[in-house]
Length: 179
Length: 179
DNA sequence: CATAATGGCCGAATTAAATTCCGCATCAAC
DNA sequence: GTTGATGCGGAATTTAATTCGGCCATTATG
Image 1 (tube, chains in turn green, blue, purple, yellow):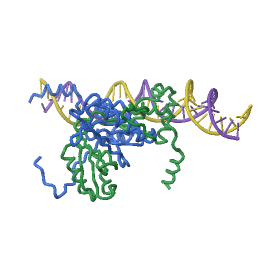
Image 2 (cartoon, each protein chain N blue to C red):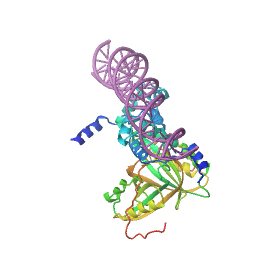
Image 3 (cartoon, chains in turn blue, red, yellow, cyan):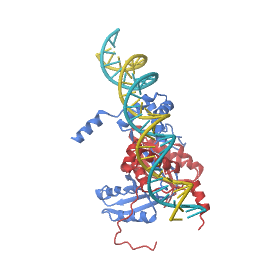
Image 4 (cartoon, rainbow over the protein chains, first blue to last red):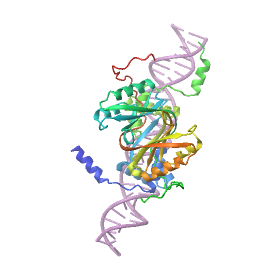
C-alpha cells in the first residue's frame, strides 16, 4: 500500500518541464544552496515566495534529488581516490557485487560498455584500505579481474551542472552525419 | 618540550581535527543539509547553538567545502554518462587540455597512474554531444588517443561519505605485509 | 596545589528568514 | 466573453538562525 501511494505520487507529478528560470535556479543552488530565498529570487528575477515556490516544485518533481554537504576528502582522512574496472564472468550485476555499496569508500558503481563490465569509484584512507577493498572484490563470485587507476591529482570535481553546451566546435575533418 | 612555534601556527591555521561528533554531523549533512540546527543537534546530541557552532567551524576549516543541490541528470536532459581515458604525448596537464573544464558537461578531471594519463567524467545530452566533446579533445595538442566507457546503468552515485571502514575482511590467501 | 585561561556547551533573547495567505495578472479552453 | 488554472508579488505570520551571557570542564601557569 505504501508503494501504491508512491507510484501515484510519481505519476501525479509527471516530468514537469524545466524552463530557463528553473535552470538558473538550479545553477545557483548547485553552487551554493545555503542562500536565502530573498537572494535567490533576486539573482533569478523573482520575489522570495515565487523563488520558494519554484524550488519546492523542483524538489517535488525530483529535479533536485537532495541538498547535500560537500566535504573535503582530506578532512576525513580519505586522500586516495581510485577508479576500479572490473571484469566479470557472466552478468556482472550480481547482488554479491552490489553489496560492496555498503562500504562508504565506494562512491559510484556503474555498468559500462567497453572492454570492462563494471566501473567503481572508490575513495580510501590509504593503499592498504584500497587493497582490502580489492581483496573483497576478488572474493566476490564472478569477478575475474580488476584494473585500478589511482588518481594522482584531481583538477576538477563538481556536481552535475545544469548548463548544456549548445554548440560544439566542429573540427574540419569531421564529416556531417545523417542523424 | 617547547612547541611554542607549532602552537602559534596551529592556532593561526585552523587545521582542526575532525572528532567523532564532527563526523556524525558530516554524516547527517551529507544526507540532508536542509534540516534545522535543532534537529541536527538532536541527532548528534547537542543543543542548536552548539550544533551551529560546530557546522560553522567545519565550514571555516574547509571540511565542508560547499552545500550544494544534487540534481537529477535526467531532469536537465543529460542522460548520457561516460568516463573518458586520455593518452597524451608528454605531460598531460596542459592549459589547453584543462580548458575543457569550461564545458559544464565535464564533471571531473584527474591525472591517474595506470596505462592512461588522464581520466574525465563527462555527462552529455546524447551521443552527438559526447562526440563533440571527444572531437574537441582530439583537437587538443598532445592528445594521442582516448578510450571511452559509456555508462549503461548507474547503481550507486553519492557524495563523499565521512565514514571509514576500519576493518576489511582479510582473505586467507593474502600474506601479511610488513607495512 | 591553587588559579587563571581557554574552549565548548547550554538556555534565553533577539534577529532574520521561511512559509502562509490572499489578491492580481496572464493565458488557454470553451 | 467567460471560466478555470497557474504563477507571481506584497504583507502577515510562524519558524528557525544567530547572538549573548553565564556555566562547567580541561588545561596551562605560577
